[in-house]
Length: 343
Image (cartoon, rainbow, N blue to C red; front, top):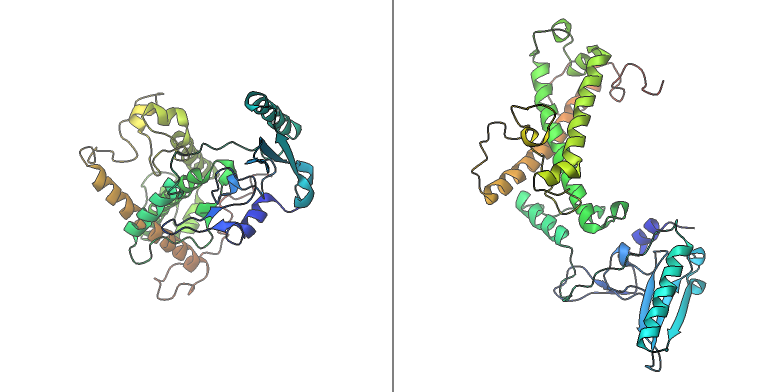
């Protein structure tokens, strides 16, 4: 049986039920059991196991409730079950509620149908987060604009919705860009022989930053990884974010926001924040912050390319055309520790 994700990837842009409207970028979809007529995986009546459809009866007396048998989801011709309700408004609604509760209880392990909230006006069905993403993409690079050849922004990561998926993708790019910028600058500094004057760094004589990492004691490597893990948990925890008036980036929060260590650490005082340690951005307006974030994203993209180019040139001399000559690295780039962690 083909998974729902694969089925959706096939029919998302190739369905006879698609209905395009002038002025609406994202088409509607008219397949059965799609109560919103939005062309999105979470509402699609073909790929989901648990769906429900409501339509007027043929004789305009009562209505027909259509559900799907989960065990026959791979056989569309036999999976749909239609029930006509003609017992009056109150009794019919009560019967429909009982049928839906029974359907949801029969197959608890399948993907449950979540009844969507129908907006009062459906002139524009485009996702707000995706609209923002396209606007920001144009601001960041007017020449290329919005570029998503794999349509990742239209997927539904972990069943959290398309807006949450866009938030995840934006935050992931910002975070990876920040790490790459730190790594790029660190590679330049270490490649030029600049290092801390105390142990264990003072005894490391390797010229290549990759060799310098291998020369670190394992305990030092674990400390670095644990510190990065702490920053990750601190920035992801909803309790910490909400205490500072923010939300998680997959729940409507700002992608790229990092909470204040001075305000939220709590265990002991922290003198400086990771972002803006000297509070230079305290009086900055929202437009300037948005413009600087776009600059940060662009710099992060370039840093990701640059850092990987440095590593490739160190491992395979000549791999980067016109690149700077770097000391050759004979170790294993994908093995940051001397022994596998699982041994």
